[in-house]
Length: 425
Ligand SMILES: [Zn+2]
Image (cartoon, rainbow, N blue to C red):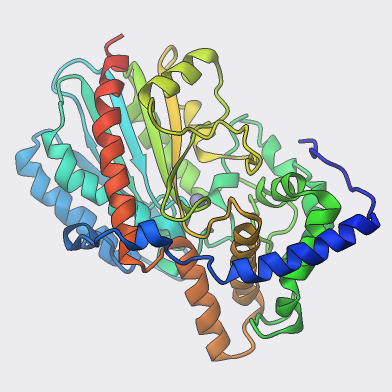
């Protein structure tokens, strides 16, 4: 992948600009991760908040309990588990339920949660609400539904985005089939590696931490935000202890999920795959990220299904592309001639579309990773860093949680009837 902007020469005007930017960003940072007035005005709904569980096992137990209750109401419901082999935890599974149509296969809705483990509590809450409250009332004549809970159970359980091998699963799925992905060289990342992955114990009171914003601004001025964001976020395959590491081989989850997905996809004319994430984007807003459409038919189907919603097609300034994406790989499992529409639902938490938000977001991810590999300067620092990280992916605000659930319910109500018409082609 080519970098969009190469290094630029420093000019005196930039230094003045940098001073102004530092002042603005230092003040802006205090409002990051805080509900704005609109969000704060939203009344929390206890019935929706009950779906948010604190950890992987609570979430999985609830998924299984809902599945059990649905069995009598929805004959034909199939559920199963994929067992992950992890060294230090015996009981980690990806659970799934599949409801086939009553008649001929038309369209299939797939909802996956917890690909990034730390984002699992929110995705799983949204998913379990769908399962308990929406699924029983849906048209089943030609429509099928596949729900996959905790794609990355190790990360969900340990509250890390990555797998037990520090692999960001959404950078790990090689769609080419030749494992060429793992040979990608991300030179932009290599240039930043020491800045992104310090090797001393993590602390929010260290010299490095104090000057992090200032150093980030220096990098922004030197590289430009789009190039910097792209280099950091696209994925890297060179530094196994670094952030956004995509692995050096396919992770176990791929072998577990492949046969399940391929088997369930068979026979459908249209497949909408919704992968649930948190962290990126404007706080309290549901962002819709399709992949780069493979062709015009997919693009127009995506636009038709999500008409009325803002779809981030990748033309905005804060856009970046990633390699090894899960939803790209799923395409390789779909039946020939079917229409496959991937969509990432991303629930924003830290306003990472702004410069201050993107710096804050990066800082929290870096510190968590640094602490994981190199420890913390104290128990208090560990607690503070983990708490900030948690807020970046699983905000405690009941207003935020209510908004996320209500927005998603509304999307399902709009989108599912449209999906059905695509399956009737
Ligand atoms: Zn994510």
